[in-house]
Image: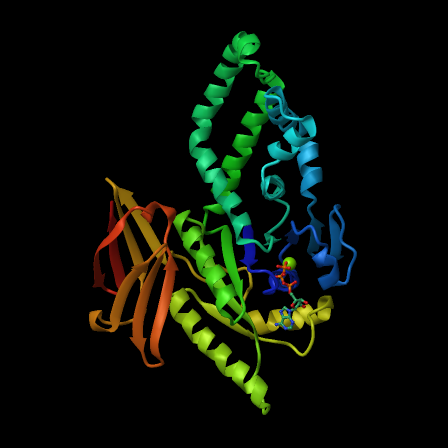
Length: 389
Ligand SMILES: Nc1ncnc2c1ncn2[C@@H]1O[C@H](COP(=O)(O)OP(=O)(O)OP(=O)(O)O)[C@@H](O)[C@H]1O
Ligand SMILES: [Mg+2]
């Protein structure tokens, strides 16, 4: 099975690209499922087809499912939510408020992602394409399983222990003890998260694809996603810079076109060695199967859209003894053409190239807060940077 996730800033083209990839994949004979967790029913608009919370067959080999996270949550884990809320209300919080707070931000999205685990288990699809939420933040919940995963074994023992002990102390602590069914649910959830994590971290299965437009904001957003994905070991295999205005005889559009070309060149350096596809802005909005198919052909040509376009990280991090080593692949350059500077939570790498100075700003992981950049060296197109406390 292949799992392909499209992420990027709002409006960059995640939904249409997800639809296009799914259409193309299904035409190549793959049993394809397109999943959306976007509460706005954008899939219906793009496909011009009514898509609901039930599995909908669009054409042969191509199914679509609009996940309603609230339904997912209430179907599977409402008891867990009730228990968490009961802890808060036992502390004197109004019950309605307790529920609101127990429902942590983004939690709905996490439950939507768990749907992937459920579907993968049934193994009835060759390809699952996930149209992600606009916020890059949501991606964090992909990494959440990794954290939970490593803790889960201990946690499982702990919760069983706690429930017994907690019941003893319930009158004193005034915190409701979890019932055995709540604990069972918790253990089950952790196990599902573990499986989900292993799916996401398998580069043969999962690819994140970055969607951006040729503008500063969306490219910066994609770079942050790229950094986090690298940090957590999820493979990013492709970047798509969408909505290029083709050159024109009109002066106004020529200016835009030139500016976008510059942004594209920068992106090439910034995302190196990730493959980038440059896609033009079509004459109109992309709507309906036929148009989406045309869009897919411009992106993938005759290539298989489900292949792994690239494997291997752009950055690597190694932390030990209060030190953090960062390894960055840089395009062919020499030490003399390279400048490195750390500004706040970003690393600025300036490379002199034929198009002038190209600045690559890499967002730094939170671990570098309170550290200083102490050493840097270039070796075989890899930049080694050391941060120390
Ligand atoms: N290459 C393109 N040419 C013309 N129109 C495009 C192109 N790419 C996307 N669009 C249009 O841009 C709009 C936004 O696209 P889309 O909904 O896919 O973005 P999104 O990233 O999913 O947005 P959101 O963050 O809101 O989910 C749509 O109207 C779509 O048809
Ligand atoms: Mg969308």
